[in-house]
Length: 93
Image (cartoon, rainbow, N blue to C red; front, side, top):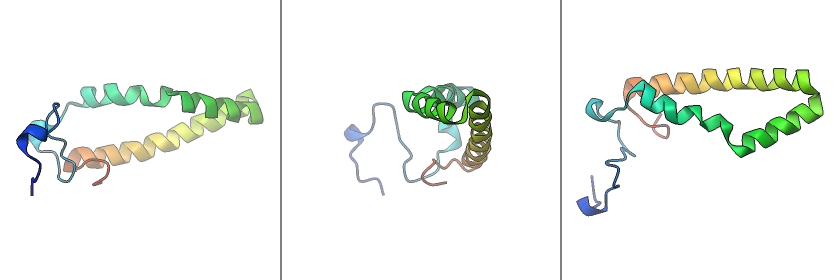
């Protein structure tokens, strides 16, 4: 199963790439949320938001972005809930 020698494991610990994360190694909701809060604030999101607002106008662009964010929040929230219950990572989910 584990063919990687112990000295070649990540300095941060086991990655659990091909198996669910055991309960003892799972992080808190706050810890995981702190990482994901910054995710939407990357430059590509700002560029695409600017293009949407430019083409639709400010109000309609803002509405389109909000609707898209709500849909994405529901999708990612459902996947995150399932991953939290099963301990599986995104690829395994």
